[in-house]
Length: 187
Image 1 (cartoon, rainbow, N blue to C red):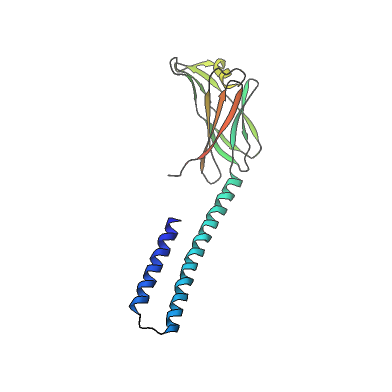
Image 2: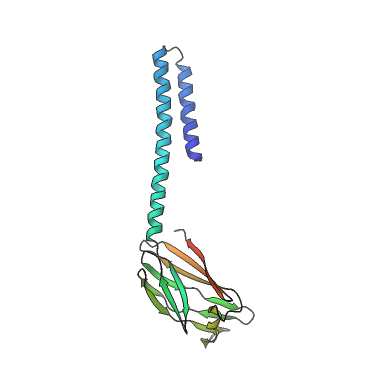
């Protein structure tokens, strides 16, 4: 909007200066100049609105085709499910830090290459304490019925155009929520 106002202001300023420089005009030249100024202002405004419509249409198309991958804890396993409308590529789940003092975390070693829309796949989760594997003992922290603290699951994936997305889920006592999806800017 700011660019539109600057463009319109600059255009009107140039037209007004030009009008006063050629002030010795008859009435028809004056009316023609005013008509050209108004037509130019309308054309700039129309161009700006068209740009905004194109940008919104592109954003809506991207939203409709975006993958959306979530982690679903199920009985003794974890599932990745793509609930979006596009295929998800290069899916990974970040380590979940359970306890900093004892250096306890849950590691998801699987890197899923492809997950089409409405599909589900199993992933492994391994507990680590002080950098050593301890099995799946700590995985219970990621099940809402056993959670005794709030933990954040971070899932990262890409769409077919290599745009990276990050989904954050929060697991806490008796509740699991999706905090949202973020689009990482391309570098």
